[in-house]
Amino acid sequence: MLKRILLFLTIALSFASMASAQENVGDSVMDHAKGNRLSVGGYGEVAFSRHFFSDNVYRYTKADQYKNDPSHGRFDIPHAVIYLGYDFGKGWTMGTEIEFEHTGTGTSVEQEFEEAGEWEQEVEKGGEVELEQFWIQKSLCRGLNLRVGHIVVPVGLNNAHHEPLHFFTVYRPEGENTILPSTWHDTGISLWGRLKDFRYELQVIAGLDAFQFGRDNWVKKGAGSAFEYKVANKYGFVARVDNYTIPGLRIGVSGFYGKSMHNTYPHDMEGENADGTKKSNNNVKGQVAIGSIDFTFNRFNWIVRGQADYGYVGDAAAINIIKRTRGKISNSPYSTTPVGQNAIAIGMEAGYDLFSQFAKLRQQAQKCYVFGRYEYYDSYIPTTEQQDYQFTKKNRIALGLNYYPVPQIAVKAEFSERFLKSQYNNEPSVNVGIAYEGFFL
Image (cartoon, rainbow, N blue to C red; front, side, top):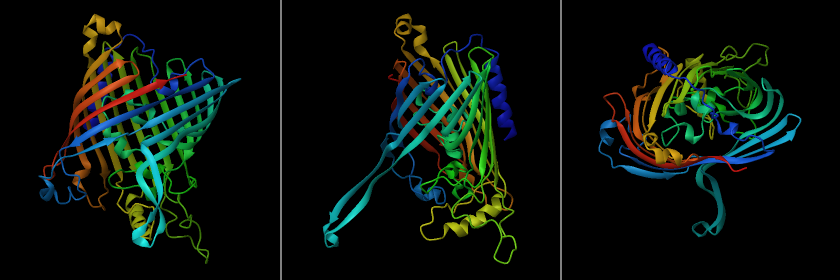
């Protein structure tokens, strides 16, 4: 594991030594709206996938039985986002981001004649509609801005730069998207600014919920809430620093720390019993620590991106015992699968613009990147007290093309395959998509 991280850092630094001109384009769609009081924009993706492996939930526990299952396909709208921003003047601005995932949710009312004409309300589809950003900001100077509200948590490459033209694959990079909330957004306070070649950001947000952690997604679902509000008995602390000293290269480090136990509803597992004694789970804190390093290199007709993330959950074994009991309560929103003490995600992708070799295509601002991506991730690294699950360890390779007819639109195609331990079946797939990103005002 340590060797993988060191190899990643070595490759990242080798690209740093190649660079010699500063990239002028911002890394986030939020950075592109400049000079207008009203900003209207967004991004969206349409995807088609064909999976040449079983989609049965027992394909890992009973791998031999599902080895020859037929392929299956799906159409999807992973994300469709509307961004609205306004500059009130005197340094006061606001921003909102409304996201429809998988075309949103849908309900209907219909009369069931099979049930004596009873009227029923049914959920027709299972997407999500989320307010990913809603904040008010006061800018004191370029180096000091205060933002309050619902904000993006920039831990890792994917969260800091999650728009679809900032990765080559049809879907968001799989490793980070598996173990971390994505896009991670929460309510809190952010202090950020740009000082010469450095951009920094510090945040205080609501803490994660340990009862939402699990084997297949580590802490990914811990930022969510099953209630009308976000429980915030505990708080999380976020820091990120990006450096732009070397032209064409951005290198960033980011991290999160917070306690995740006793951060749910009802808050009845901490404190004292009626007889004055402390409750048995008082000392279970569930500290979560996440560290990440990432980079983006854009020069010489190459785009190279990479990240390495590693995380820790304290008291994992104790959390799993408590979680199993709570999760068995009827209609409980909590996960019953165990959470590992650690998780890891390492990924790198590189693409070369073939159209850069043709003068006419360069003049038309068309680009076509041929790319490759490799990633390794494990969403469940247990303690010695916990059962091990070998199928959570995955290597993934993707090869494909990104065609840009105009700078704001990308047509994507790729072949990818997940490689699992020998006792399981590998998971090849073909993905095709189209995405846009930009501002209209």
